[in-house]
Image (cartoon, rainbow, N blue to C red; front, side, top):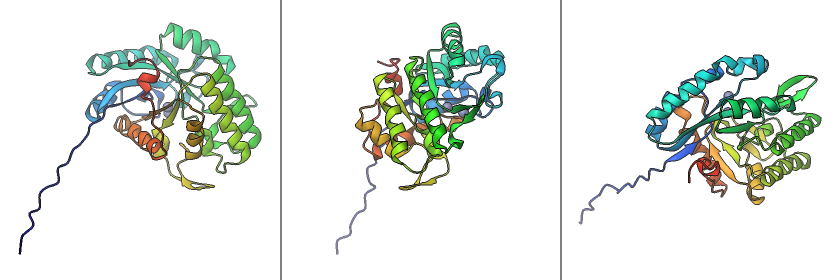
Amino acid sequence: MRRLSVRPALCIVVLVNISSYHTHTRLCKHASGVPSDYISQALKDGCSSLGFSDHCPYPDDSVWFGSRMACAQVPQYIAQVRDAQKTAPFPVHWGFECEWHPAFEGWYRDYLRAECGAEYLVYGSHWVGVNGDLLYIPDISDSTLLHRYADLTLEALQTGLYDFFAHPDLFLSGFLNMTDDVKAVCADIIDTAVEMKIPMEINGLGLQRPKIRGDSGMRSPYPVREFWEMAAARNAVIVCNSDAHRPEDVIASCKNAYEFAREIGIEPVDTGTALGFIR
Ligand SMILES: [Zn+2]
Ligand SMILES: [Zn+2]
């Protein structure tokens, strides 16, 4: 009887470096690590370029101060990124993740962008205004507020302030049924982003959140397959980022976002390329 020789399978590991431009730091009070920690981890995981986009402060520390850096910490944020930048063997850029409210237009445009010199602004559509309060959108499931949220979001996209739109489907955390009304809001948001040429982000952090039951079964609160199928059908520019709040997620979570995209047939654009930083 012939004995079969068992040869170890030849294993080819393809290392693909990817970029992520949605990275937080501990200055925002709900993330850990400083820029150099994220850069060390990104180097281990394979990174082509990295962007820091910590949550912006607001004038007089007046908005969501429990989860935003203080105005006085902006110089520290910039200095930490610049110091870390010197040690990185890949390009490092920086900016802020900002919400939108017309009252803060000058803050975003004249202060964060012009005076601080932010290289890019990420639109993080986190809130809707109700009677002077800014409510966190994933907690909202009311249709009237959904439309108010949509109006604010379309207005933001039309300002030309933002370089990409983080988790544009975050609001679907509170809307579990893809009714015609909800789909119409998705379509309006996608169409405006396409018209304004703003890349939209499949967000890796959302994939780490506990699953919830939507009308087509268990899903992540965001990203939501139906939203991204609509975005792809409407020729949106789609990017993937981690939204890392811990150094270990800086690239790993971005890879999860890529996997989500590819499972539904989307080939994302590299964020560094979409922003014009990498040619
Ligand atoms: Zn955050
Ligand atoms: Zn973020």
